[in-house]
Image 1 (cartoon, rainbow, N blue to C red):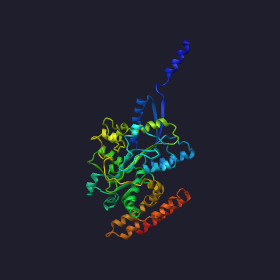
Image 2: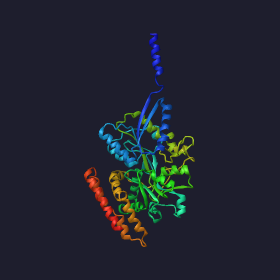
Image 3: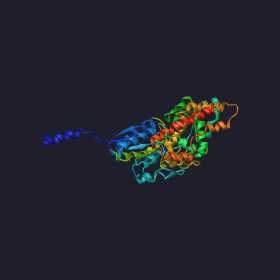
Image 4: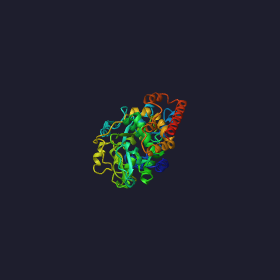
Length: 432
């Protein structure tokens, strides 16, 4: 008996002090968010639950790529994707995922739910089915290099229309909307605020001034910081993080007058999550005052990020109270006026087809577009007829809506995209 107790003691002594839990996150968020939130959650988890947790972070390259990855996983196994959390990418993405039945319902603890209002400036902060919650709020605007702008004698921009001027020829960097959720949202803002015809004209003009379309939302930010270009349309937190690190004397960010929107950046537990309890704890942490302070505070401030400033807007009202006077971004979405509302349902419904049309008209034919645009703006007199022809798309808004109903037919989709590319090339050749 004594020997048996001794053997049992040796076995217990050889066990790890804590069992290890696991969490699998799929996210297009930049690495700085991963580098702040994963270590903070691991530390919080061990202190609160007396257990180690391993976090596996997956990113396929961008929002659209992550969504394709998720669809493929559920296509192989409708019950579970093998991923616990999907985090980031904009509201329209989560509206789409909820309709596809990929998201699981989760009711927040009452105390935490009380700290997060139903809306901010009229924008919902969680879905009525409680299948996703906003983890942060984003706005979209113009990020610019002040040194280059001053050298070139270009005034600070006030609206997206300002960027269509000849002073910005070759000095803008944008992302391919088929690979960037934020680029897609900014295009949707322009179409919804300008109208179908005028919106597409502006998108063409912006593309004409664009040096390159990048695959990542962060690449245009890098181009502005390095001085390769003077301007980029950008989601606020990419810009504000750089301003926080490099100073407002060098870099600037402006919201477009009359076109400023708030877009929630949601987080959700996925259907069939194999680590459901850990996933619930992660959502609670991200939305808590402790988790939200990582968004608001500058790098190195107690309670703030350790590696890099994140420069985001919080969804937790208590977090604003506790960071007053310390935040990078002084704007408070719960008190700021002047935001307009984006039709998220509409943007979600049209997203895939809208991106394919933008890809055909602006990105895949970009070299032809730039030649035509350069000829238009360098002419002695602006030719209004050529300008109108340059900004045309091959479908009316009503025709576009009808097309979306058949977009799951891959043969039809590919034939239509090829026709759009041919239309664009012919149009740009005629303009030249």
